[in-house]
Image (cartoon, rainbow, N blue to C red; front, side, top):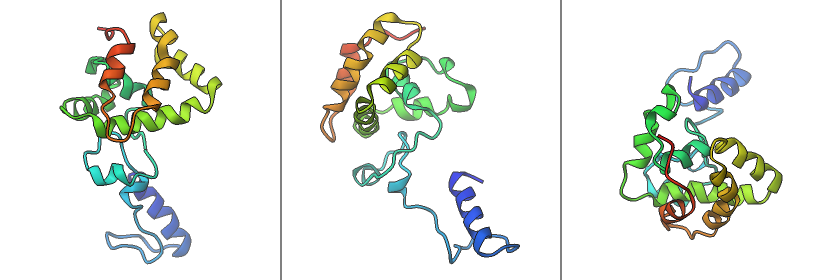
Length: 161
């Protein structure tokens, strides 16, 4: 089962041992509202406006940044390549930028973790590592509903081919 399916199976089995969970809603557990499970590639404005948790299901934050920078699909693992066009082939990146902003705010709260992330996310390009912290500072200052592509294009060099 999916992540939510596993959640339902586990808690249903805890309350009703030996009784299989079918497609009917369990009387004990239900799927979380999508505001508790927003994925960066979602397109519903309502989900983003009321988001509680951003779930980097598939592409992780560094891969989302790389996708927005124009890294080719071949740079990603085959299992997540289909997510790249889902995220970047939109003219409006404001919803996706909300998840990048949220991640940036949390990363800036932990400087050691931010430095480690920057070294991990962009290991081959020294210029990117040196500007990574500054990038997150700029991204964290974006207001709700603003596009982040201007920040990305101004602070990071051209993508790796």
